[in-house]
Amino acid sequence: MRVLLVEDDKGVGEALIEALAARGHVPTRVSRGADALTRHHDADLILLDLGLPDTDGLEVLRMIRKVADVPVLVLTARGDERSVVRGLRLGADDYVVKPVRLAELLARMDTIMHRAARSAAALHHVVQVADVRIDLSARRVIAGGEEISLTTKEFELLAVLARRLGTAVSRQQLMDEVWGDAYLAISRSLDVHMTQLRGKLKRPGLLTTIRGFGYRLGE
Image (cartoon, rainbow, N blue to C red; front, side):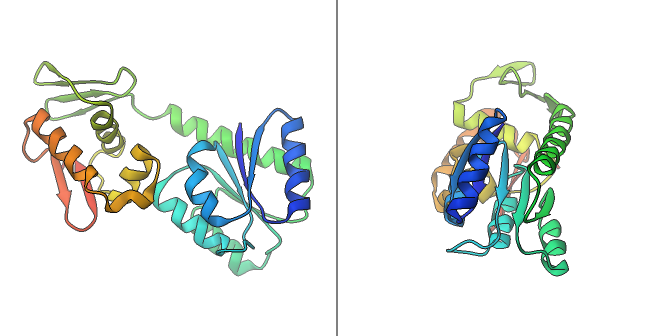
């Protein structure tokens, strides 16, 4: 799997990178929380230290969880109960206190990824809302029996909303998943694409704007 290691200690980082690569993983190391926030899209799993030089790792975890569901395993020397509980409540899939035996770490990583794979397999590949059928695998949209031609960005926006049917999705999450950067959320390009998408679907009310937050597909 592609592993993003967020670890500022060079010695620890290099040892982990070597061990993970030796077992067939594709690891990448960054040392700052800011780097984790811009590179998490390329990872199947994040190993996150909490003692980072630019920001606290728990804050990094909180920000990642606002925009992405990538599995995160906290790997830190911070073993106090408060930090462990907060890390898990902020969305960490597991919390491991250093030093940890490599075999245990690898086993915990495998457990997290098996759980994530089961969740992904359970997702519906076809979403139906009113008379609109969204085939996520084939990347096709049928509305009222007619196929709707969408641009790549328009379909990707619709797909993000379809996977969370009936749920309000923030601008940050849409920008993060479609454009690959949550920091672009102030861009007006999102609104332009959503306007074009609404126009092609020709179903007023199907896409709802949540003022000051984002968008929702369906009721």
